[in-house]
Image (cartoon, rainbow, N blue to C red; front, side, top):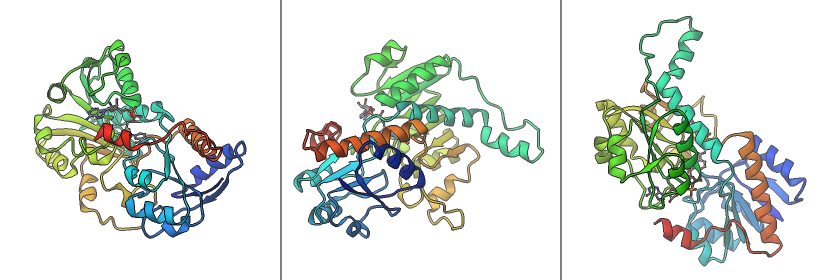
Length: 337
Ligand code: NAD
């Protein structure tokens, strides 16, 4: 099938081309992200393939449909950047990669926790400058600390299991509790209780209208003073301004982010020669107790292989007229709304 692949980076191309030897799709790689200004590039392509910061809103969908596109293949699990209802109304099929590697994201989550706790980011810079003093590098034992996991789907369940391995007490919140998580020793409690008791709070729920700014000013105040907050899910789960206020007051002691609510203008490109125009993001960079990675939690060899394989298989299934296996439906959006 002819596919326009938006937001292509060298690594996407490498893994998609490798997997495509088994599929034989006609892939056109485009570096540009998809939005209202670039959608014309998809004209005449029956399928497009997009990533997390491509904008697949109602306008873009209408223009895609007008240009003959029938399939939107997401290289991601999350679909909050797609107007699924508009796609459905336009007769367009949307497919995704529901589970490419929960381990990749879970392990990166734990890397952020360990980095923040043991100040690896500061120690690395210090030692390279010949400064071997230990002041300000004091951490705490994870053993016996309480970790709150918000959202215990594929990723949250792995995080809960790993933290159990550190000897942590694991609390969990999810409207649909997962028995596997309980078997591994996590205890489901109401969200308020989790927030009030956890030394570390880590977010693994999807971004929906209900979870938008789940961590707002009131929640920042309700959490244990000096809490470590980790978000590797979606940026808008956190009201960044409220969290900055919490960092300034000491309500939040550590912040680890792999996602940011306005990341679309920043992440996945080299801006090292540019002045960052986003003052909220720039403020975050000034805190010694904040570690930010640029949406790289998924970024392992294993995940890229799985993303490429499932994406190309999703496209083939559609091309052959079979019921797509990894369909994104309006009902899925409504169930999370
Ligand atoms: P999943 O669908 O397996 O699990 C999500 C869980 O969240 C479900 O159990 C669901 O019941 C729960 N949930 C829904 N609403 C909730 C709420 N209000 N409060 C608490 N829990 C709620 O998804 P997953 O594969 O575990 O992925 C989780 C999220 O991680 C995705 O939505 C995606 O946004 C993000 N993600 C990030 C990266 C990255 O590279 N940083 C990569 C993959 C996924």
